Image 1 (cartoon, rainbow, N blue to C red):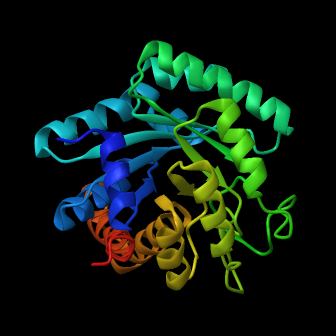
Image 2 (image 1 turned 180 degrees about the vertical axis):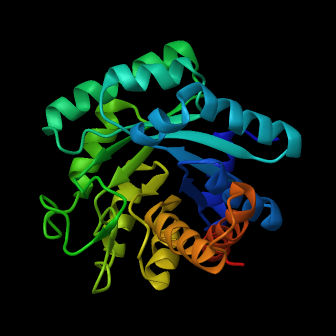
Length: 286
């Protein structure tokens, strides 16, 4: 099986992207794995700080390891949005495949400083662990929103010059810019459009695989064009949470006397799996 880095390089060379899907529990985990196996595609399981605290840092690693071994399938584990060196260190020590230090709310200098600390530690412990960092604030919550997240400026996106300098000074493996994307999904209107030209500029000057965070709610056309411009990994979370919420509500309404969780959750897994499959097909031109 190819390495994580090789799968990313392969995606870039073929003009496709690897899907990254956040999980909070076993049902969403199996929905993601089922869809990836059905399409025979690599997939990234994401767990944020809150999701790791809920599932267990070691338990998330064990879950991915077990599925990867059982099915001989390329499944990778990313420690999503991590806000301190201490919490980056704990997932590196636990053997995660990648981690993102999110210093988007910090000053440029402080973001560079802590990101570089994370990179240096990862290189010392295991050079195969990929370190990602984010430049440009796009919000923090994967939920349905009434308005653009507070503090997010769609007129102040990550510039190519900032990106070049940041990547050069930190030595990161993956770079997540602000290019019109936001975390969460807007309730009553469409999400902002992506700045495809900016993605292309950043890709050209950094020569690094780019990661699109806040993918939920993005127009299909923007996904396709963003991937062509240099996006190698796309994050989806809120769309899964909405599918989960709606499906479990319907399952309980349709079967009010059912108390066996594995029976109640079967249609929930199926609903989330459909969302994952649809996104993977789009990201891979299927």
